[in-house]
Image (cartoon, rainbow, N blue to C red; front, top):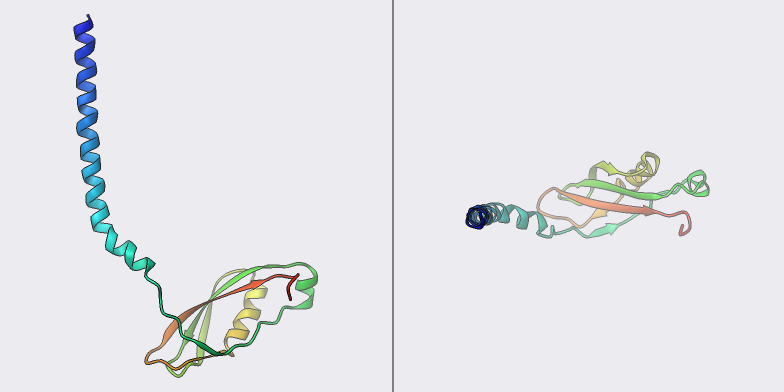
Length: 128
């Protein structure tokens, strides 16, 4: 009976060894395939310098009501540096509207092509 138990355990552990080796090989292959995409996503994007910047209006009723938060915007900037459009990516809709109005007035450094610049505003009723 001891022999039989030993063989069962031995065959199960042999299966685990070959299974973990196959899993490790699969993981290695997937890592090699996905590595260029992961590295490309983490590459820093060059930002254009802002020449003229306006702070967004923080409406008193929102400030007094302690409506706070972060607003994220993508600004499409023409080669001459003017902002042609903004796209709100997240945040309180009223604060985002105030932020987008301010960014539309910004002026960036000229560049050879149109770019999309990420802009983040932190609205805090205690700081403004």
